[in-house]
Image: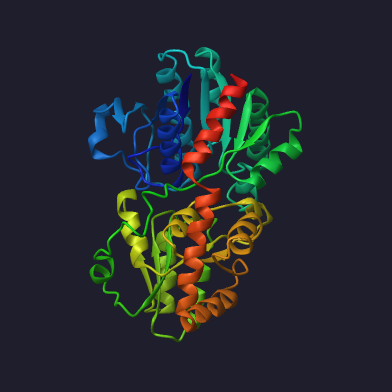
Length: 406
């Protein structure tokens, strides 16, 4: 069987969808599939094409044995809506003209969002005689509407119609969380909707095999400090202001908060930090995937917040799996599915009401008073993801699903 992944985001970019799709591609290949990828020139998160790829220097390459085809994309550091639409739609068009020259496939799996890439996926699946699989990692445009990112009624209606059309054209819809799966099943009862969760490579993220690095010394953190760590996108959905507000309530000098990553709200949050005059919060730049195990080895607790919105009750941020695999307990500001799995099911941390700095600060103080609890909940977490979110098993189950519909 041959399958083409169509995605705007892919390594060497760093990020959750990039890692998830590449890890799935590798494991499907290991199961015997011929896997190829059609993607854009890498540019995320700095919104500039990586130097090695500028001027179309690399149009085709092999990454860990996966054949990757690149097509041009418009990139701009502007945060305006026009620049964002040009970014999305430029790849919509160039990906089609690049992809139509490829050979036929049995399946075409498209990653959404961006939802607009559904146009390319529908056209290419027909051109390449491939069955369309629509992989949903975020319920767009619903999440964009709930977050207030898109308010124009015309654009929202246009996007909802496109979403419905993509689902109806797909032979299979895959959702990253049970919440996404249930949402789609409720609206499109006639469609086959399959849970394709994110997971973790337990060999790569293994605290027993990773040596303590220089992270603490490099950034001036001492051995006796307790590091509360957020790593990921600094955007609208995360509601990271809660970390700053909670940090202001903490009087214990051993507590240090780290926010590592990049995103549209980074500079705004830095300005908030400056006004609050906090000395126990530190912003650090993002690092490559290869560096993350040593970063997690050095920290003590993972803080995972999202805004308090009903739509996020079906969300499972990917950073959860990496932290749990590294025996790092969670302070989870996400209700719903993530809470049921990782707090109630795994006993791998504490739940904090989303956007409630008092609740977060109270849990921080509990862990500061009971360091042994940090170790116990951390070990619980690794055991749980080993049983339920092992990437090898996830890919193998998906491979059998593909064989069923072939």
